[in-house]
Image (tube, rainbow, N blue to C red):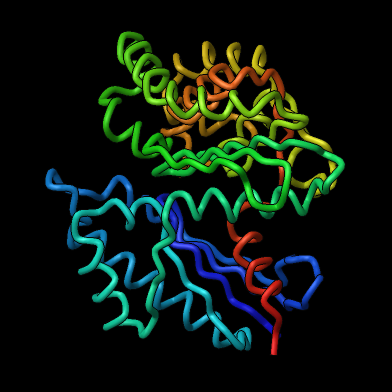
Length: 309
């Protein structure tokens, strides 16, 4: 069965098509995405404004047409933090369905964390022991830990790189005082969650998923994406601290010239790095391995585990 997975995230609308089989790897045979930055298209009341809605409808419509051309037997469409937290999320879902015929399922933050954890566990296997996973999106940060395929604890906090950039930084590069204030804010938001996770004991493996972590790892010396998914990539706390000192003084345009940094995300990588550094520090993690599988793979695995017709 060919499955289409449509992920309406806070940064992009992303469609992957997979020839799925029970017990098979969720490896895409087609991959399409378009930048949207929904989390930055909220008005003062927290609504996704009309311009942002029109862009979303256009992107979902284009993805649906592509899924049909690719011969997808089923399209699993879901939305995460930006739509989930929007004050007019119900209206957004209705308008998208009315104009495209696609009904987006809103994943809760906890479900997002759990599905990502499932993908990470399948990638590393049982021998990894306790896994603690961190995932930084545009709108939220997901954290999870456990020894099985389902985490014992799973959390979602509104600490996404795009959301924090939009809410905290109004100059380019950001003012040092704003960087310090944001660091203090992130630390405070993490206290309760970190205490609960650390109470379960040390992790055998710390893992980072998401484009933000892949970019940070690349900027600290990890192999480029062209080297393939099976190359081991890591991100260390000391390397991350040095990186923050460097990129926080650069403009977004200058950051976009760095290898591994896309022009669509260069403005938010400082906030993403601050979240990564604070999360690792709060959880006592000195090194993360970067996992190539994340939420979309978790959605596919959950679907194939149920059996395919």
